[in-house]
Amino acid sequence: MKWRNAWVGAVALALAACGDDAEQQAAQSLRDEQPATGQVEIWRFGLEEIEGSVQYEYANRFAEIISEKTDGQVEVRLFPYGQLGGLTDIYDQVQAGAVQLAFGSGFLGGTVPESQLFSLNFILTDDELRNTQILNGEDFRKNEDLIDAFRERSLHPLAIVPEGWQVWTANKPVRAPEDFAGLSIRVMDNRLLRDTYSAYGANPTTMEYGELYSGLQLGQLDANIQPVFAHQEMDFYQVQDYMIFANQAQFIATVMANADWYDNLSDEHEQIIEDAVVEMVPHIHEVQTRLNSERLDIITENSDIEIIYLTPEERAVFRERSLPVRDVFVDIVGTRGEKLLDVLLEQVGEGVSVAASEPVMVTETNDSIDSGESPAQTDLDHADNTNDNTAESVTR
Image (cartoon, rainbow, N blue to C red; front, side):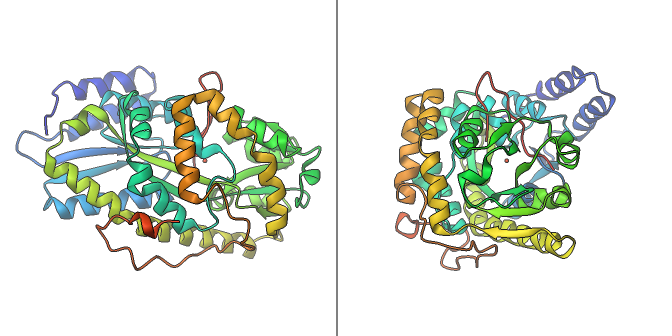
């Protein structure tokens, strides 16, 4: 590893520039943590979510694997959301190399426009484990266009983490586009999402995440889109009457590294990271399905909200309306984005299967995938922004 002596100062300047006492304290903390020569290496991992979240569970297990595989010579230190500033602060720091590793999801579209691919509806299968395998299989995760899209922004993609289905909540049952008519649904400030929900017949409305609960409570909004665990953590379900599973999209985050830092890793450490992210594929699938299932149980036990699972026929109508938005994505990101979309659609068999009915909240981990073994191709079947449309990540 070629460590740069200047990185500590870069952290301090990046955080102090925010003018916030807490962030300046965080900068001092990072300075204090820098190991002396010959001591344990510390890799810093910035998270978009709080402790107990899917991202935290991923990063915590990743840290354990790295420690085990390096005999304790590398420590991965986690910084849950808020400790390093906001989302743009996290992205800026990993691009600058002040933080070596980070998650990027919805808001990352402003930095890596091609990552908006995961905002599109009905491009994955109904099988969550299969989706996790596809996205982390070498044909997609190591696709040259995907890697180039990140590396042009001083980043290197390492893993792709689906965190569960994006679920609709509303104050009326929604089973068809006609049911969305007149409904004001909160979306991130993103052209793809606005076009999608306009196509569904709704009135897509942007509202800050921190204002969302009161917006729903006061009737400024009629509907919402979040993963199950976010609905529960933020109590959105308490001010909505219906929760609708359409399996239209999953909330997906990318694990990424600073490109220069990654390039200066030893071959041994690069391989250790590769082994770790492959080992994490079945593990994080089990974690996110368990967390979402547990949170759904909490929701149903503590409210009278009605759960609706769309039928294959009902979902097919929404899928058909979503197809033109793929052209919008290509218009935004160009040829490279189109090639990535084509690769993903080929992997999943051209979008989504509408044969499944009620989605399964907990899926058994595929025992045929051994730890440290990449899923073979034969085994495989909260996103969002343009340069002028800043998106907000789903932060918990």
